[in-house]
Length: 111
Length: 114
Image (cartoon, rainbow over the protein chains, first blue to last red):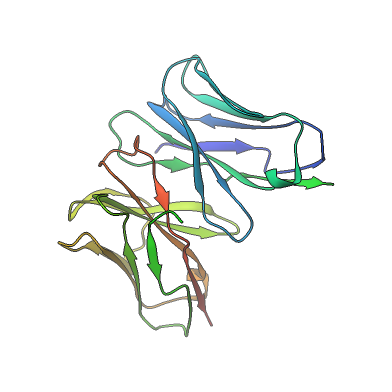
């Protein structure tokens, strides 16, 4: 079945440093979504990427979808303490209704 | 507030027991999803319903079952509970049946099996 791998599992940074999490799928994806879950909270939708090579930005966050539509990344520039949380990617392949989540990257930021 | 309501928020029960988790989707959303989140397994998709019909099945155990009612609320039934079933169970909803739509998560139901 479809698998979505996400690395790293954990990342600790100093405030102001950049952060990147990577997502790789075993199959070609029709779209990929990114979610953020604050400690003790629930996943919250951030963005969806659909097109091959697509790049989207939200303030300090940059999301990329690979040319082959099998990988994606989330990059945060100049992290802040409010960025703390677990970032999940979730991909859907072809006609599959199921959205498969990666295991997430837990980001902690030292002020 | 995502608009997805889950009850109960916390539940403690003994092994071998049966519990029911309830979910009310966002107004107008026809799809309901159930996810299990544990420390070691991450966010695991269990099952999806669309307008009362099962649409997709994930890693849902045979001891677990779910249904979506005509008013679109959903219930997840967990039976013969084991210690390993302790987890946070999320319900989520979306407007359409394909998961290309944005999925809105509820705050989750914490289940502790003792």
